[in-house]
Length: 184
Image (cartoon, rainbow, N blue to C red; front, side):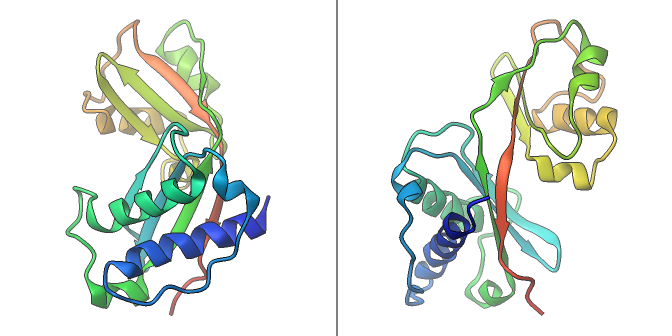
């Protein structure tokens, strides 16, 4: 895992958020990977609880631009949360996940699809007729059982827990992730 790239991404993510409050940016280390296309998710937590998470499933801009944009979106645009306030910044932990390209999963039915999921490894995208949901591999930590993970993913995509259709599409990806140290 490229720790230098991870540090560069974490600093850029925090600077993108802090800059919205007028906080001077921390020095940003360079890394050649920042200029290549990349897809990231930025996850914000406070005392271990989710505070925002937004990302890209496909690489459509440079990694530098992607991580900054997703950091601002996670802090100020996640519809599940109020925008981050300036007094929350110090107690907010930033995590950046760098996604591999998604690969389709071939399956014969729902049970076969569920059997193929790799807990703790796979990020999964579920698509069906314009609906889409994804869980990063980190979600396995709170939903370690395959069927339960899959049920919650369907609900995230706006489908019922018992929904299934033969034209459901599934994709898997993996991530490299980096986290800021835990704040006290």
